[in-house]
Image (cartoon, rainbow, N blue to C red; front, top):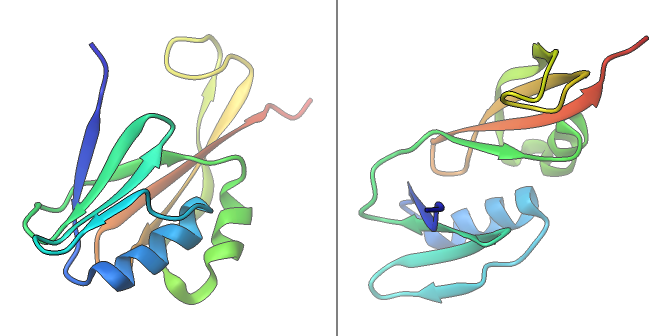
Length: 123
């Protein structure tokens, strides 16, 4: 079994498309309006932005949290700046020997999105 799709609420599909295109660094894969559906591909998992979907808390893996925040600039309100949340001593939920960095932003539709990156623990 694998995750196929995650839905997130979006009132304004055009505005959401601009935000997620900047955040993800890729264009939408499909738009169906009506009924008001916008899709992005997240490495084989569909991100559906939908006027009728509830709000979800998405955590997205990025190469560098700080670089992504710089790239999206004023498009997002930073709720929590980049910080180390956990150091992985083994591979149970992340790569061993890495710090897990997280930041949280509000997207263009008011949803909270978590950004996660992993960096080797400094020696």
